[in-house]
Image 1 (cartoon, rainbow, N blue to C red):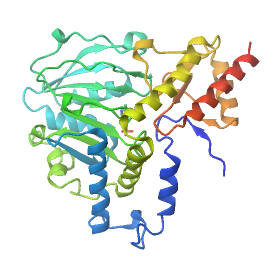
Image 2 (image 1 turned 60 degrees about the vertical axis):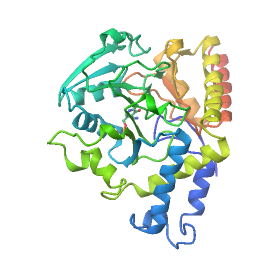
Image 3 (image 1 turned 180 degrees about the horizontal axis):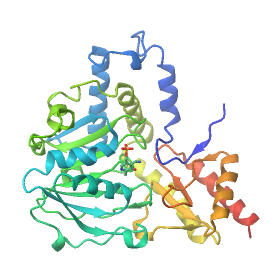
Image 4 (image 1 turned 180 degrees about the vertical axis):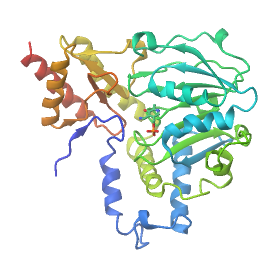
Length: 361
Ligand code: PMP
């Protein structure tokens, strides 16, 4: 068996020990005589899995008791509509910071249901930075304030949170969940598609303050109402049972093998520094993001020559470094170095980049 180093932006690399455990439990989970995939979601054995997944997430992220954890489907993209339907319920307006395509999609969807106001944008320089925010420009009557915390495509991340006062701050944390600790109580709601740091695609996690649940617009479809899922412990309908089980194994890995989110962050900082330090000294490769906005998770870079970028990606793939092609909207390269990417993967990638640079002097 030979495993590649997978730099995909998502779905992406998972910890090898998680995959092995899942493989070992595939035919017979814990003496139940069945795979987790085959179980009724209403069975006692599955109930323990979903409950322990939620308990682990609460421990690892230190989620306060007045927040609900919901295990949903539909991806982060469904949240772009669910958020306004549920939360644009007082003054029918919300503030947005446009830092890339996902932030823009959240904004565009909200604009279908109410007034979506753009507070700041970094579109002027291809989203290569996080704009400075001036709280005096925030709407005090907004029903919520939305940011995309880590911009997967452009490789930027918020280092400082906007001070939104009493207006609930909502963040898309799809590509940075579990990469470091987050002070949950600073947010009204956090949400993420699981397919980067948490598990396979199919699971969407919502962490929402209880007082924000229960005032959805009248037209909100039952399945799009947070109250439906909160009242039924994410069991209103069939939840993504297997994805939740894998997320539980990933959380076990973070707690027991890595040692929690502080340790996770240290490892992620170390990995990102190896790559950024090289990009800063390289005569061939260049990072595309302003230094103070750089993401630990997604690292876009270019050579400045499209043909050479293509050659690099092809050579890298042959050597077992896969999915390094940048997002179709920006081109170049992007190395996504999520939690489960071992440090060895980043060291070997940099060694290969050095070699490529030498050969193209
Ligand atoms: N937000 C961010 C930050 C993302 O990176 C992505 C997808 N990669 C999405 C939203 C959309 O997620 P999904 O495909 O789960 O709908």
